[in-house]
Length: 394
Ligand code: ATP
Ligand code: MG
Image (cartoon, rainbow, N blue to C red; front, side, top):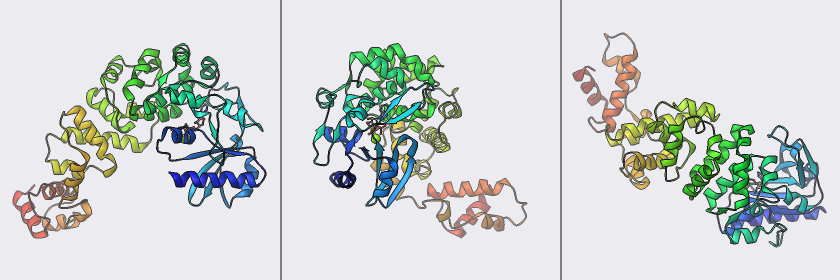
């Protein structure tokens, strides 16, 4: 983390050497004050994107019209954005016009919360015109300017307020809390993809329960896809009292409890990726199989990146804890890691039964063999498998 900051300071210094102002801004400054891990650093500058492009050898123009470029510096990416203000959000998506400004304070004024409106110069001095440091110290989320105006300008900020509460455990000041209550319906104007980003961070936050309380207290929950449409879903969500590791785990959890809202309903309404859809389906399948099928067969089919989701879901739904370390140990001890490790394939199966016509029975036998090898009913040995298949005549 310290290295990341050093690199960011060098980028800032390089921009200054060209005669422009530059500062570290946003979440990185907030999280460094809080002592939290930082994974990306944003930089604000008085230089225009075209000017920044000339200063570094590798610059990717990710959002030139909004003043943003991605600077690759010693293998690390920094989002460098020209000081700007935003006016008019008539479509609730993107500001109508982006005005570049020369002054840092104006740039900080467009930012959502005081804790996110602190800048840091190359010598790590803080520029904090909206008193973000004292709000961080008091653990309170307040908007830069009137909450009413700022939420109407970009209703996504209501969702962001709640996701920051979930991640940081800060209180929402009364002013933003009332303003969410008054403006909540405007959230429906926001592109669902943007809401989904904040929603996932809300679900996975350490202080999920506090955030959930704000969602109900303000009524913002009544303006979220699916949750607003089904009272039973909303009640189930209300009962959920701990965070989940991912959006996929959340969907699996809800689907296992309320099966009449299909996984595809969730992923369509929230416009989620196919990966999330696939992960949700697999999690539901494996959690259902967990008490019925041999443990080795369940964990064999569990990909590494879903171990945490699976472990949490079992705890919540089966009341049966199986921790990550145990899962990893069991997976490491499996006789084969995937189907390619099986000593036989479809061709072999055909040769074991020369009289049979090709058909779906081959895939079925392959699956049965895989399962038998994994649960150590038979050895991963060609002769053993052939005898077992021919004897059993599956
Ligand atoms: P995280 O650590 O989750 O990335 P972050 O504070 O960096 O949190 P981002 O969404 O990455 O959040 O945004 C970077 C910064 O841009 C914020 O800190 C804030 O200053 C500003 N910002 C982002 N979204 C908005 C918005 N909708 N309205 C106003 N300012 C915003
Ligand atoms: Mg960020």
